[in-house]
Image 1 (tube, one colour):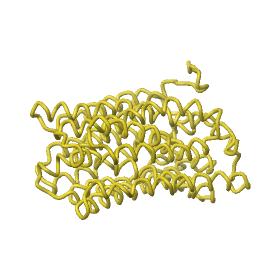
Image 2: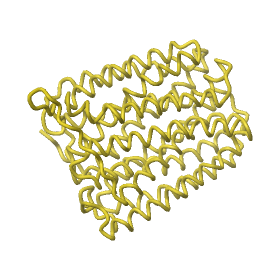
Image 3: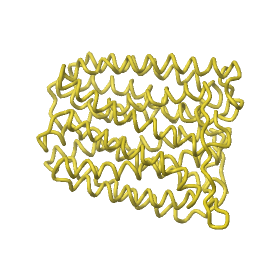
Image 4: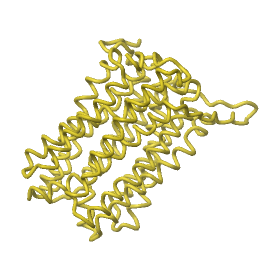
Length: 409
């Protein structure tokens, strides 16, 4: 039986199955991303070349945006999640075994394809399952993923410190993907675990997303959130190395401060979003991220850098799930199609942000390159406010009550 908790939404077996996608993806992101500078040193490549893993991840995300809505409708959500888990396991295995950039980049494409199919199908499923409480469910799911991912940078640091390198920590992704697939396989088809939509053997046409002005605003805030998170997790290790003189293992482990902040705030923002306007929380989150960046950017010791990353994480952690919840709320009846558009935009952000920051780092140093982060955060804050104002004018097709509370409260 579903059980409602203090956040006011049921956590049944289906919800738990959807949460598995966040666990797998969270571990992969927060174990591999801090490893990118270490991979660059290991393979003897530049920061810009290492940043191509973000581009490969983007390519997988773009492919997922194209295939996921049609695949979910023609084969069902459960099958989509199972296939995604298989792709994640295959891609992660190839990534940790890769002897060169020519091997690691294709493996990342496969891995990202599976990961984005999984997250897209799970987020749309949670939105369908929980309706007006979607902001809480989506934020909690992301919080669980980042909480598991919190161990990732620590695992990388420990593996590096004892001489194993970064690969064993990332390899854990394979086992988590198989466990997630097992849980999903035991959930019956029906409800938010949508069945295939076919008639006479012909798949139903994919519903196209029509994005309103508030929808565009929340799509922009989501892109800003993704760009900031991936640029920071890819290159914070390099910044700490450059500014503090810490060893590679310690520098990689400092990223755990960011993930800790992201995890902590998500368990607060989830229930809070049912009482306070999500748009207000989103705008504040971008401002908090700027404060954390300022501490990180001026840090000259690993301990201060960790504090800065933790404060930044308090902002980062709320940005993505709130943006997605707000975006999906503007598109009733088009959940999977709108999620696909979000996946596409997020994929482009992943492809551009780490590579651009890596290239800028090669040109002017990591410290100066990080000046772009607060600029992106400021844009996110302004656009979040504009999205709320557009919703108050009635430019959204539905009342924001579909995500728990009025946007403009």
